[in-house]
Image (cartoon, rainbow, N blue to C red; front, side):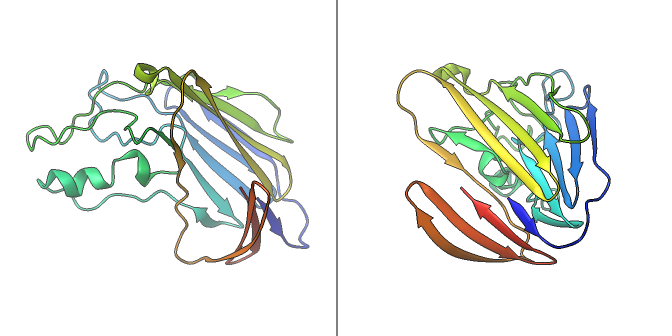
Length: 208
């Protein structure tokens, strides 16, 4: 993802909060919030969502990839869990399974299974070109581990790498939730690559 602007680079920075399972990395106008939060309250989850290895991406202070948030609290399990499912976050789904199994009992809407243990976030580079990485094990029952690496190698560029290791054949789905303030246009397909353009405060090129 590359932001097109002639402005000079801003201050680079990266901060990892190891106990919270959060990292914030910045390079120029690109800023990423990286989520690898363990399920709280000894695995019971409470307010936990299936957002392991999800990211929020801001360009020039405007969210491009955003978290879908949540609705007001409700005893309707389907409505509540619609905002908690893996597909509601910027991460990978394997075989249409949830990272953590969700409960639909109206008496357990603040609980979640403790399937998706996460590794500590690794800081693999310095502040000038931040690289952070983490894994989760929510798909261990089908023999798959998801590892995500976020790289900000230069000002205005963010690279997201997903590595899924294991055996067998699986179906993968990656979701990206864009803030509605951005206008997305498909540019072209080049072989196995898809190119899009997002227009907001900046013009941003996206390659998948």
